[in-house]
Image (cartoon, rainbow, N blue to C red; front, side, top):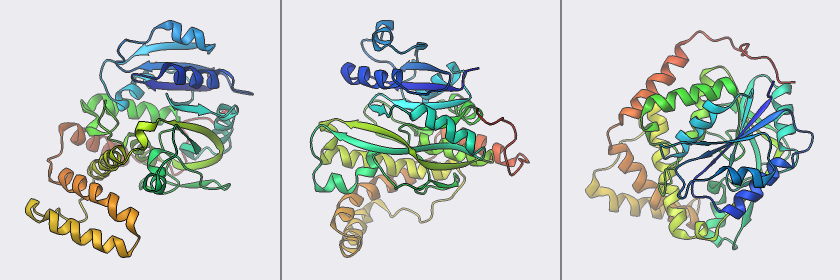
Length: 337
């Protein structure tokens, strides 16, 4: 019985960094029975088996996902995996040596938690400037302290895990893969090439909630998140924030939540942006005022766009999950041991 499936999705990886990531997986101490699945998402040139062999990871498999996008790469990894708990590792995540054993322990000790992750320490190729530092959590870098945070996966909150080092029970992950494959375009969630969309990690949490599970922050899980210098520019930060704003609207649509406020007419956007900028200067401050220019523009633009067929399919799938008469405590899966 395979307890943990490590799923590493990659596109155009830095080979030296990928080697460090794989070596960290190979050097896990006290780890449960595991497998490693590397998903090559249309890298050019494509990854070959020698990358796996050189890392020392065993047992490991290299699979290919021809549809570009992180959501589809994760779906391919899920379809190829046989474990009871899936741990998603990005190609810039270096796991602590006890990450897998701690993930297995957390799942075993709390059968109600379905999706979780922990602390992510930033390893920066250059020091972030003041604006990037204020928004470093947007880069999946966080430390929320020594106490676990457990809550509902229905809404975003500090307890909702990021995609880096994400741990997901197999039954939740398989529903995710089915929904993504049915959607055609994953509803615009997940990064695709240079498009910095996000939100596929939140979809795991929404599925967990629909199936009766909680989600959480588990501080004993630690990893280093290597962030390249070109990602620490203001231009990248603004693109990242815009992608997250679009994903926020998309997730609300998929979850059946209407827009809280209608977007302003296009001709009023400059006036609205200025008013919001001045208001945010007073509170919470300059760094929020600056970056919310990008957020507002992307948020309003996404509100005006008609839902894609993929969003509609995902919304129907999530609604169908919620309409089942599920027990308050999940019983479909035995605790990990």
